[in-house]
Length: 134
Image (cartoon, rainbow, N blue to C red; front, top):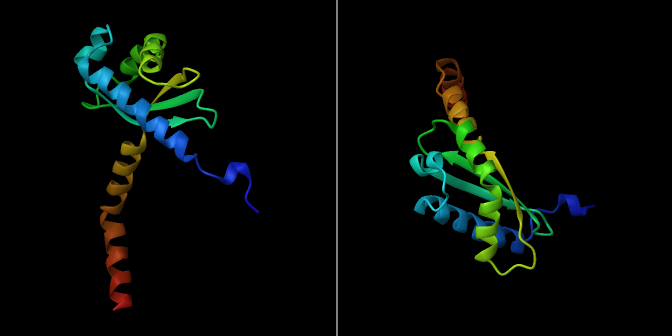
């Protein structure tokens, strides 16, 4: 039996999240934020997850150069109110979503898994399994 928690995000939440991602990406790419650190370091907005009521948005970001991620997150959090206002002005929602910025760790996890799979011991085990199946 499925409950509400088992369901994924609604199509509307996904669509609004993607719209917020595009708006934030555009703002950061143009350097509209009056913060020297954000102007100097390109930031990618990789994903935006909206709450079911569309009042909260968790924004996952990654520094494109992979440098000063903590400082970039701090700068984004410092400018959150201005970013919320800017996003709300470009959307037609009843409420402005509260933004929460987090670092996107998925690239680091993928890199770690790739490194593990390239380990000679794992490669040897994978080769021996392929030989068993043939």
